[in-house]
Image 1: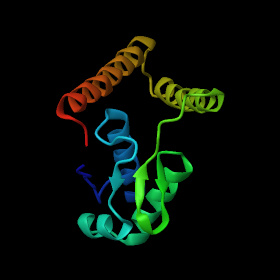
Image 2 (image 1 turned 180 degrees about the vertical axis):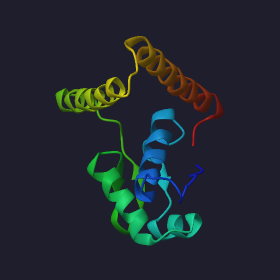
Image 3 (image 1 turned 90 degrees about the vertical axis):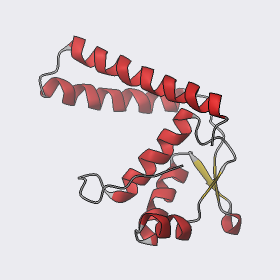
Length: 135
């Protein structure tokens, strides 16, 4: 998996790492049980501080995307069945995004089109990675 860090981005580096790993999981590029690089290795590969990678991994662990196995490393976690908490959190995030979109003048049609476009992109990435055999 290739992680592309943009140091000039407004998004902190630890969030860029987190978001790209989540995208890898969502697309099927990273599957449950797949090992992720050690904090030290990823920091070296990306040219960032180890604390930055560690912070990303802590967020990923807290959110249930990875399991930290101590000295044995970090692996992608099994996807939990979407329960009430996941649905509630997703609704909250959707509401935040939709409120911002409306405040920026996007119409219902524009938001629906963007949502469908992104949903297709994720579906396409999942299919593509399944065809390639995943991570």
